[in-house]
Image 1: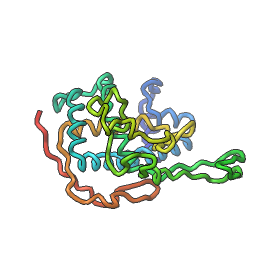
Image 2: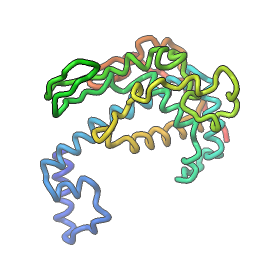
Image 3: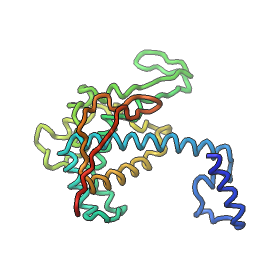
Image 4: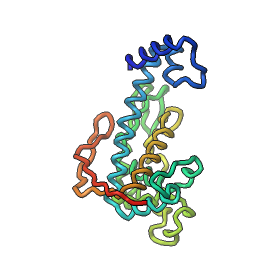
Length: 254
């Protein structure tokens, strides 16, 4: 990070004239304000935006590889916006991929990126009859909840349909698989990006990376994983792969 900042400063000096504000990167703007803040922010972006996205990407690929019928359904949707291998993404087209977004949500439920959220109350609070003094670390371990049938019916199954509105999932209407019967019992059981003013600031960027990356992979390849998925991830600071994720990719013609 320090080398990158030094390089930016050297390039700025060589260029002579200052870049227009709209052409500057986020890092260049931060360096101008405070070099220390720029360093911290760059480290945050690397730590929070690289490993988290790659682990989530692997979890989603694993879910799709082990559930070929869901993968086929997703590919059918993606083919409508990327009919050819070299088709380009458009902002308008990416508004019409409800099943892709449902797959991302469901994979984050099955393989959460962290075990939970921690908050420190600024004032004394009472939670479920217990007084919690200010300054106490309060953790919500939602990884134990997202795997429980009490909160997510058929929790062991990869069911993206649970995140669809009824009008987005016409084939499952009026059946036992109706999304309404599979939705979480409480919105606060599922918080992969946190909640409120301290929720993940990179949420939309991460979602966009996942949407574009998975759409391109599933459009162009049949993905298989022919091994056990037991203990697929382990918890460090974030959840990371714990087994070799050796996928088989079979090319799909136009």
